[in-house]
Length: 219
Length: 219
DNA sequence: TTTCTAAGTTAGATTTGTCTAAATTTTATT
DNA sequence: AATAAAATTTAGACAAATCTAACTTAGAAA
Ligand SMILES: [Mn+2]
Ligand SMILES: [Mn+2]
Ligand SMILES: [Mn+2]
Ligand SMILES: [Mn+2]
Image 1: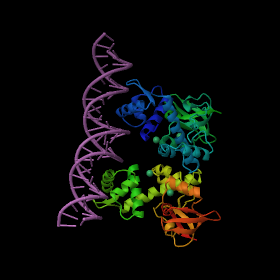
Image 2 (image 1 turned 90 degrees about the horizontal axis):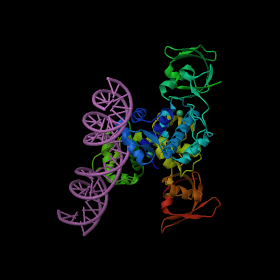
Image 3 (image 1 turned 45 degrees about the horizontal axis):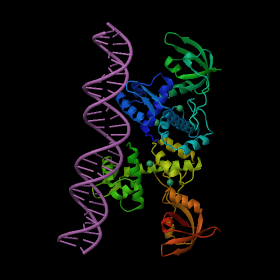
Image 4 (image 1 turned 180 degrees about the vertical axis):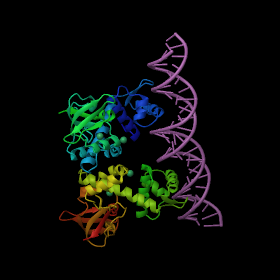
């Protein structure tokens, strides 16, 4: 199955929406891909033709088994390149997503597997996301919840959901990265903001928008 | 100047033909790019519009200063990726050209320069070709001639002109790679084939087609 | 159940890059 | 110089991916 760059980006976004929302809609996918619903409908027909998605008009979109497998291979390449950029070329986590967005489309199993080996077969990427293996299998995510839903006080950052430069730069500025241990000082009901403290540094407050995108586990 | 992948491939091929042939013709470029002359004419108009080439119909094509600069940047990326693949991921020289053909289109100065640094700022690629620096300048090629034109008997392989898997695999099989020292035993006028000898191994004969693509310097 | 609105689809256009077939220009050969 | 051959360009078409504007459908509200 030979996919174009556009098709690969669609497949990957559909996978993402299947994981994070319930039901992949035309509009939702258009928003995710920064395109128009009409374009999504057009592409949906092509991907259905190629048996990568199930699609009946007005009924939403879902990946077939084959589509899911394709998605995982693209995600594997994306995340391996992110690791490469951070670990070998010294990029910061907010710079790598866009570059990986292009590098992921170089389709060569040999390249992918050699890269993985070169990196020591990493299992999580710089944003805390798991990396599928050559067969497309992902190690089970350690149990994690978003910071706004955390039940306990003392937590460790395990991943970041939103990969926008804006959020990642903000977190870096605040001293929050993967593995950072933090403590919830206070929750403010009014706007669901949270006051947190890292080590011995002064406490500070983050908005709900931010805390929703920080994944944590109790420590 | 934002170039598409197709435009970059054209620019690179035009540069190559300017270096290796006299005059870049529509048909020659079509052959080099494995496309049709009509397509070349179409693209020539676009590249002229973008001021990357000089082109008047029926008069052939040549790069402008800007076009040349663009070409050198693409070539830089291509050759750096080839180095990466060979040196870090353990690919052989016949495998890397096609992968680099794709990787070269990821346009990021930061990525390119970090990659170069990571590789120790190499100045020649796995095929013996010089790598332009960040400004697009190339270190002068050490004087070299193709094997079929060599005047002296004892020679060292400095580069390979043709990057096809077919030729590179052949050379590898025969034990010829960059730096290999060889001796010309005999030249056969009939078909311009050459008998050569590497170290103490038995001598063997190579065709003119092959010897034309092996660059050497006296040793 | 009818009506309204938001979501989704279709029709038709555009851009990029390509092609074939026909026409034109250049160049080589009588 | 006339003619033939080769190279090049043009005309018209197509596929991929996208868009806007108009239309249709599904689901919620009345
Ligand atoms: Mn992408
Ligand atoms: Mn990531
Ligand atoms: Mn290329
Ligand atoms: Mn090379």
